[in-house]
Image 1: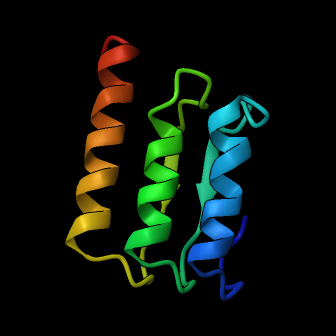
Image 2: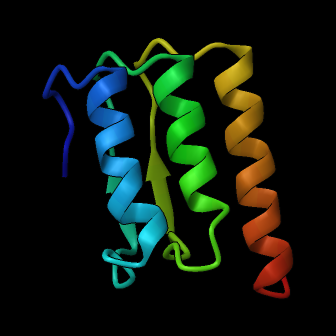
Length: 88
């Protein structure tokens, strides 16, 4: 749970590295609500989730950040790719 931690784009990018590498393969829930993540951090996280080594999340909470259309689209694409790979 990383809610309410004032995490910004650099922290999101730092989290993206282990997320995409498989180091967090058992992760099922990622709560990043109420931080300061913008499009740059959102794109980094979304790209990590596209990795075949990334965990398939049951829940991803990212509300109350500073994510715009670019970040939203990146998450939509990444989660759709995960669902397709998972056979949903």
